[in-house]
Length: 72
Image (cartoon, rainbow, N blue to C red; front, side, top):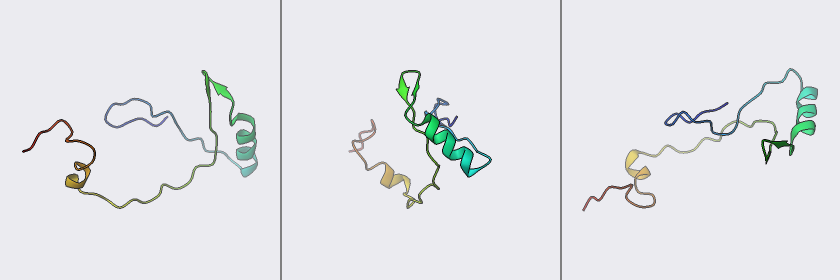
C-alpha cells in the first residue's frame, strides 16, 4: 500500500506484480469494478509516471491563497 510521506496514511492504492500477462488480464477481468468495503475497486495495468516540470518553492506558494501566511 502506498502511504503519504507527510501523514503516513494510506493513499488508497497499491501495486501488485504478476508473473504473466495472462494472470494480469485474469485479475483485471475478475476484480475490476468489484465491491471492496463498500467501494468499487479499479484494477488496471500501471503506467509509468508522467514527468512534470519541477517548480521552485516560490511558484508552489503562489497557488490559491496565502497558505495561512499574510506577507504584506
